[in-house]
Image 1: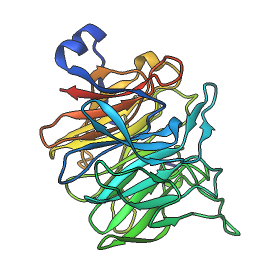
Image 2: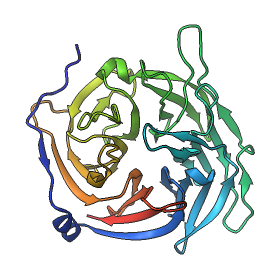
Image 3: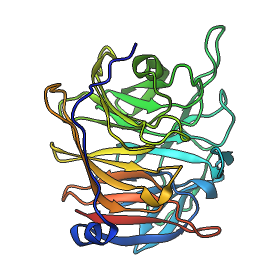
Image 4: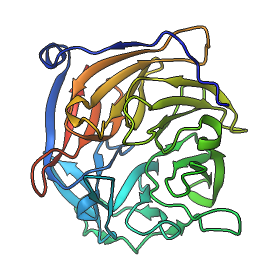
Length: 328
């Protein structure tokens, strides 16, 4: 029987008008197709986006998307509304080394890919021009994994959320030596630890623990969790109900501000960016505050100034997605 910290959860939901008064939301780039990943390049500060439905990774320059890696496979994802997805999570382990989580193949065939990036101004490379790639294939006892949605890095390992075997909900771990990645193996079975499906958002806490946003069932409102794991042994350190529905992204700004995006499949008008006040101190209540209402947010990253960059799918036809900057 799972033990979720049944603490006094304060869900501070404010109206859209008061939200906008508290947080400034600016569009950084539009014309994207189901963007599902975002990362800031170290050294340059350039923002990279997984323009997932378009099967490419782009860099944002002067408000425009410049192709960096193209021709990723694209598949459909979702229950009810389905979305075209290709590349998903993005992570820099070096200024010129980008790791991309794949989502365009069936489970068992999706790839975690490592790229040596072309420099700004150089021609884009193809998706199959990776320096290395890895699968989590099926075994006699385990299903194959896919949809490598979220990536986090602690300096020696990359932690990857996967959505293949719903009975396990694996986080994979890829060892990093210098700029060399691998092997890539299953590490933490989050479904067994929490009894809730779908690890999606992931980040490293300031103390080195892993923080995972467990999406839960997209047909069940309010079931999303925030869970802290020991990065060395995978043990659960704390597990919190949030009252949110479908957490897709998790990121810290500084040491205290933990932000999450809630897609909220069942009622996307209620989705947005939230601040979660939660720690491994089991005696402290969880508090969730709405920062901004956003249209189908999928991923986020923060900069050194505390700004939050969020990819959103939007509601229009075709390339209605965008990258927005939220200033809390």
